[in-house]
Amino acid sequence: MANQRELTKRQRKWLHKRHGDLDHQTMADKLGCCVDTLKRILMREGLQYFAGAKYQFKTPETMWDRPCTLCGDQKQRPINQYRCTSCHEKEALSSRMSFGEEEDDYQEPSLPKPPFDISNFFTWEQSYG
Image (cartoon, rainbow, N blue to C red; front, side, top):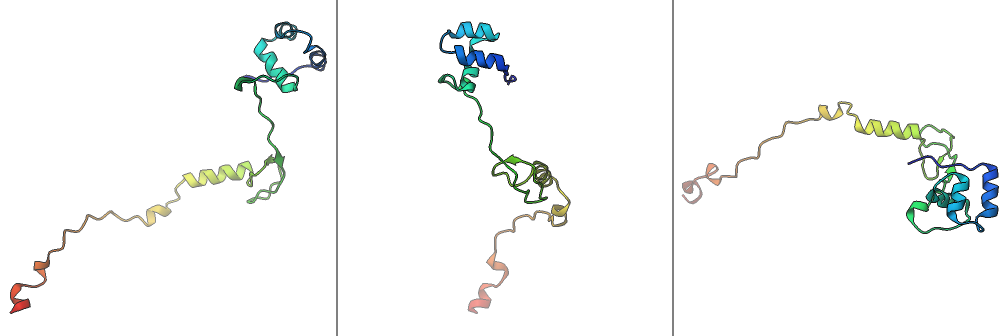
């Protein structure tokens, strides 16, 4: 995705005054951008609404400075993220790595046992004889 185009204070002031008087093509020519970019700027500034996903903009995430549950770091991070980014990455790495614990408990898979045969335990004479 391309970088957002930032307006100067002068351009912003001019746009706020003239956005209702001029058509989009004229305003885009004055600002030196295409009509789609102008529409995105108008949406971002709250001057005009355009339906369509391509003109929507992402609202900034709300942040908090709650301490990290692992290391206690107080840096700001997105709300409801309880671990700081570095602790989160360390935890993700450790869950993907093997430390040999699985190898200690490893057992060779056994073959299935043959079906039970009753003739090995007693004969006809032993039971009815």
